[in-house]
Image (cartoon, rainbow, N blue to C red):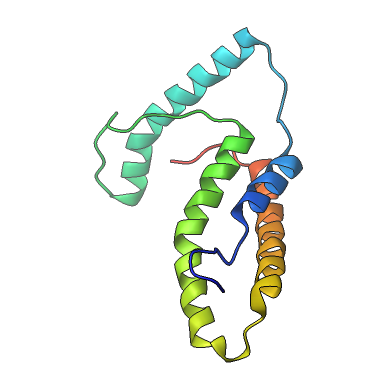
Amino acid sequence: MPAGRSPVDWDTAAALGSKIAGDGPAADFREAERVVAELRAGATRSTGLVQQFTGLEAAHDDAPVLVVDRATWIRANADGFARLIDPVVVRLSKASASGGTGALGSAIGAKVAGAQIGLVLGFLGSRVLGQF
């Protein structure tokens, strides 16, 4: 694998995941405003509940609450996975570099891996209600 090239095509993962997840439920501006307010209130309430359940200490209202659409959620998760997965796969690839696949094989493998991750993100993105 050439230096700097990811073993996963993360753009493919985000694009396919967004297509599979779809746009989500349609809402007019007033309904969307109500839902966002409800989500923000739930996030505020959750800090204390999570603290009670886990015993972990967390400051209240110290992080912004972001309400995002499915495509943005998927892109954010693809970016997070890239930071976690790429270094591991690159290290494993170097350890087993004896039978390299060449540039074309690496590019195809990256697209396939991106499609697989995109399918998972698309499935989850259509069902996730939020994260803490």
